[in-house]
Image 1 (cartoon, rainbow, N blue to C red):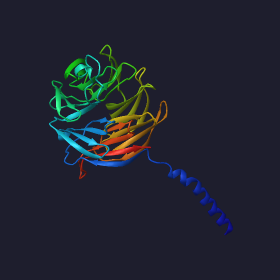
Image 2: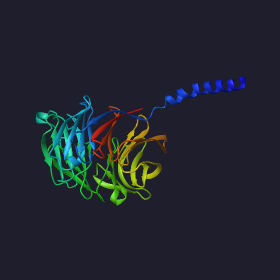
Image 3: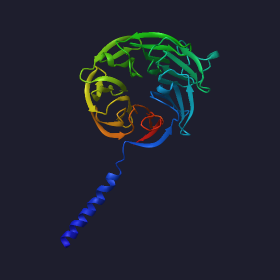
Image 4: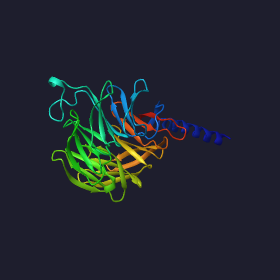
Length: 349
């Protein structure tokens, strides 16, 4: 009896030592808010954020609208109709286009207010909306299958992926195309170096990553995707010279060394991913997958990565946006199977 009592006391003491450790292991992401998008039908595509103003812009591709969300009030405040299968969105803060040339300033050199660019895949336009009234003030036409948009802070110009294979500069002030760089297929996600001059572009139909020099405005390298293909989302850790590629065929995260374009690591991830973000402060990646999960991939070493969590979401929820400034991950959930369209807000831990 005494022996059994002593054994029981040992087990209780051991449990007391281990339970607090287990309880402290929080999931890498916690759902903290769901923001309904009433009446929004169909697929939701990419996002942009006004972090200072607390607004999120969502391209509601299937609804032909731009959805504007007030992140402070946690509600949709505007639905800007008149889009044509919007895909990419870019927010340009006030003052970002100061200077000359393509980074044109306002009258008498004053900085313009902020603007929102919306790429429309159906009618081949890029609509530029003013920051306050959200009215279309300028429009660029003739860019069929307009898709992803990126802001080049160094040159203060916008880049657009479009057509059967092109990456083009946009004169935002005049809504006119600048240089166009030919690619071997339609570009999906692309990332710009901040300190360097390169742009890395996913070209899934060509089964490669195209590397562009922003100064010479030419294609300088083509890195083949042999083992894993369907390369759609992309993220960049420029400081550590690592490029992260989300592949659908089969589903894998592939990590490349940007000095030579060679694969150095891979990790299993869920299927039908469309957005991928690198959280530099936590050395972690977030992958939103239409299969119905957010995958969190932890960096265990420079060339070591493993999936640390597979968080259930909703089928078709494959686009997202991570804001380092607000430290939030936003996930687009389309209307499907009785689930209304909404934006889910996650806090990383």
